[in-house]
Length: 249
Image (cartoon, rainbow, N blue to C red; front, side, top):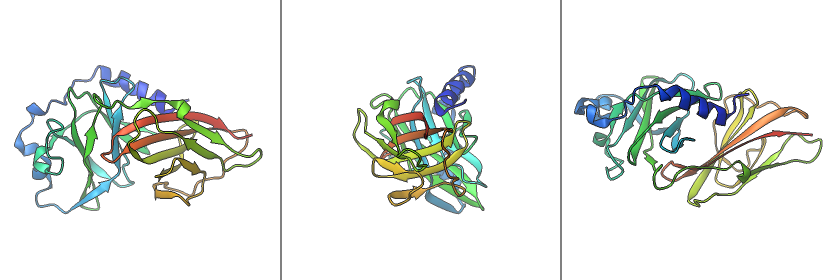
């Protein structure tokens, strides 16, 4: 069974032998985000993305949701965190390794930044360049906490609509929470965002963003599932990562 945690570990093995090509000094002004979008139709704040420390704290995973039909996915970063995150001239293009999660439902770039910085993800869709909000990489000052015990599952015996509750971890500046319910094989059943620390499958009363791609099936008794939680700050950094298996009886 490849859970989110196992996929992250596998990704570390894959990238361990890869050439580190995340040195922005090797890039020229021709590679800036500003230059890339010149003359193109763009849509800002239209890529769902965030970043968090990998299991190896020296590495960072930059997660994003590649909507069906997305092409020409690109990664850009600033030299450091002091750069103006809203000035596209400050972002240079790089090509770090890209990997998939949840059978490709999510993808991520793995980087090994020596310092904190800002990053942006773009992709094309129907001839439009979609651009994420700036993502603050804070792996040195606010490393992502991996704490499975911070999420709990509860349900009435015989019922198939479990409730998930969680607490903030060490850092309490999270403003939104991303929860994924999946099969043990990694197939996404639901993917939702709430600002409250509670979600019930599949009740959308408190869901502020829903990226579930198909009508979710009813959960079954006696079947193994996973729930994965990312607690995200206003500047799109993952404070807390939790994942636990569950079974309804």
